[in-house]
Length: 116
Length: 107
Picture 1 (cartoon, rainbow over the protein chains, first blue to last red):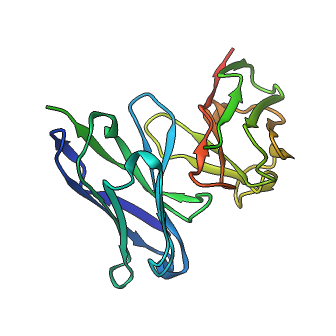
Picture 2: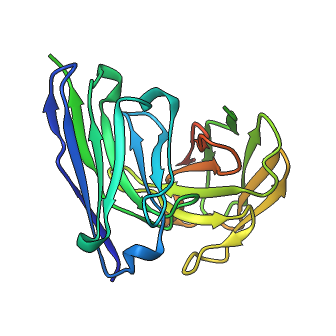
């Protein structure tokens, strides 16, 4: 059964950094674009970033450009999100998702809380 | 950015009702639209992509239609498992954007 499992969330002060990971299993990881989507507490869904199969193409929402970096390690079937200069408004559950356009498989998410 | 606006924000309905949710895009997105269902504390579930293509395993009571700027998600006969929040998402133009959600609650 295909599965995505996120890790790396936690409490961080404004201006701090975190690296999220997403481990994929039961799917041919190298066949898919992969994405990050977040959801602030009590709010809707927000697309954050995606990355092509070979890592050669990446896209970001404007609010994270220059602060977040999406990457992948196909040998480890893993997706990453390096988050720097974190702000209060980055507080959310971060989901990794299979695909670059629409998302048929989601992880349960990892919670990032930015607070002093 | 393309703004996606869903209506209504909340919908009260009874079991067996036919339910329609509308999603409007601020500019044309052809048929590059997906619909998701989300229950509290859970990840979203893909229902429909390319405006009208039913995801494998999704019950046939769900259907999608539309193109350009106006889209609808219809549940033909509301079942207990359908009480949830529904989101539309465009993937025509970066950044991909979601609607604000429509909560379907028990009347």
